[in-house]
Every structure is written in C-alpha cells, then in structure tokens.
Amino acid sequence: MPELSPPWYSVVNIDLFHRVAKQTILHPIVPWFIPLAYRAQAFQYHHPPLYFSAAYAFIITLIWVLQWINRYLAFGPPRTFDWTEEVVLITGGASGLGLLVAEVYGMRGVTVAVLDKNCGSDGDELEARNVYFYKCDVGDIAQVEAAKRRVEEELGTVTVLINNAAVVHGKPLLQLSSGDVEDSFRTNIIAHYNTLRLFLPGMIKAGRGSVVTISSVLATLPAKGCSLYAPTKAATTALHHALTAELAEYPFIKTLLVTPGQMTTPLFNGVKTPSFFWAPVLEPVDVAKEVIAAIDEGKGGEIAMPLFSQWAAVFWILPSSARKALRKLSGIDTAMEGFRGGQKKDE
Image 1 (cartoon, helix red, strand yellow):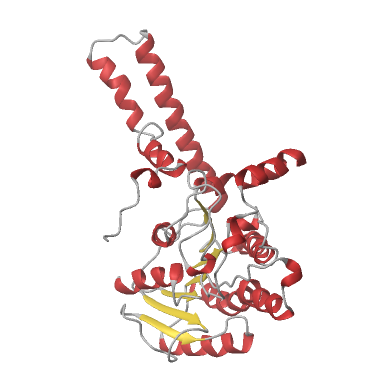
Image 2 (image 1 turned 180 degrees about the vertical axis):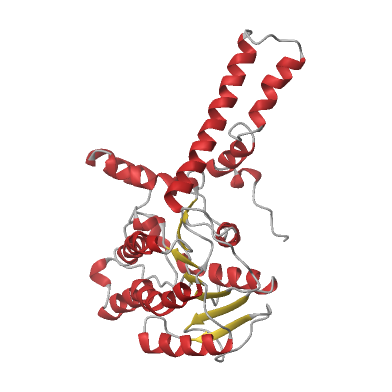
C-alpha cells in the first residue's frame, strides 16, 4: 500500500503564520504600498484610510529600525567572513545538525574539521569535499589538544568554532547512573571549556573569529525526564553570556547562541512534542540555514527557534500557580515518556 502524504494541516503552525506576517504586514516596506495605493486613487492626506495606513506603515518601519539599532548596539558591527580564509570546526558533526552545517560549508569550498568520537577512521574526508573527520572525545582535554595540533598542522587556524556535541540520557533522576552524569557533563559542558580554551587564542591572534554555542530551549523550560540534559544546557547558555562579556574587548570575535526546540534528529527519538501548533518540531536543515546565514554575515547574537522559544523566559515571571497550570496544559512533562533516543553526538 503506498505511503500516504501527511495531511495539509500538519504543517500549519504558529511559526508558519509568523513567517508569512514577517514578509507581509510586518515587513518594513510592504505596508507602505497601502497608503501609496490610496494616494493613487486620489485619496487626500486627511482621509482616514490614507493616514491610518500611513501611520501603521510608519510604526512598523520604526520598530524595524529600532530593532536594527538594538542589535547593532548589543552585538556591534558584523565581522567580514571570507570563506576562502576560514577554517570551521564542528564538534559532534557526524550526523544531524552538525553534519548538515559541515556538508554545506564543505560543498562551498570552506575547510571544515569535525571532531567526533563516533566517526570512522581518523582524518577521513567526508563525501562533501573539504570536510575532514578527527576521531576525538571532546570531553577529554588530552584528545582535544591532540586534535588541535593535527587540525592546525593540516588545515590551518580555526576561525569558526561550533560547539554542537551533546548526549541525552532521558531518565528520571533516581534512575541515572554515575556514568550517565559524568558522560553528560563531559560532552555537554566540559567539552565547551576544552575547545574554547584551546581555539580562542588562535582566533584572537588571527584577528577574526566566530563562536557558536548550540544550547536548547530546555535550558529555560526544563521538562520532566530532562533533569540531567536541561541543567547541562543551562550551563552552556550561562557560559555563552559570560564569554560574550569577556570577549567584548575583541570586537572581531562574534558569539552566537542557538536555542532550538525539538528537532527531527536521533537525539530525542520517540519524544512527542507537546503541541504541533505552538511548538512544532524543527527540521535540522531549517536550523542549519539560520546558523550558516548568521556566520556568513559575520553576526553575533541569538537564534531561537521555533517562535515560542523566543518567549520562553517570560514563563518565569508568571505566578507559580500559573506556571504549574501551563506545564499541565502544555504537556511538557509527558513529552519524554516515549523517549527512545540514545547517546547521540549532535544537538
């Protein structure tokens, strides 16, 4: 029996409406066509349809300008990204989001190094040209030091660091073993310290760099069954903010925080999203496109997907009873019941 296509309404969600709105009624240019159309029909400036539509277009444009000013003041001017001179290093890039980013950059001619303990033979080149594997447990400082020496000798100074490696042990706290705890902290947070301490000096010396931290919305909204994963991601988020402050004296190094929701990768295999409308499952390619675009444009800042993750922090200013009710209504604490994932190496 042929496989049926998913129903059309399965792709209808709040993010779809938001994307359409951003290209139409919330675009800084499109709303101006309405008062212009009224004017072309001989409406006078004092006519309500014309001045109300012009006022709306002005407000939307003003908000867009203020947002641009806010980003500029917060993260500074973008750095120049020269793809012929960059070396991109991705941890946990053997599959999922990390592999997608590696393959895209490799196909564009950018030199890419992948550090992953689950790769094939050391130094293998992937199908995408210019992407090289280095077998490495990024939670082990000695292995990262050895990988750094090889990468710099064979490929050059790393100028883009994407800390993507992660593992998930989706168990209640009392079922976690000491090995689970150690494995998660080594891969999800200690690995960040290892790579940052080793590769940042090279970026500072080179006078250019981008540091990308792949966190998770679970860092802000920890779910039942994520008592190990969520705290490690909260630590990576805190590390990003502290690091950004410390790197303020080096404006040529940009820091980017990525906080995605659930993605269709093996990391959370079997997890059922609480709401397909409000919290749609992300395709890794959509997240990869946003990350690559930000790096290419030399931007710092934050990428939060899907839409609800941009407002996740608001949850904590609500009264405790409201938070409890929202957790129950959203289904966030039952989502991990079908978890069948394993110890994967990408977010």
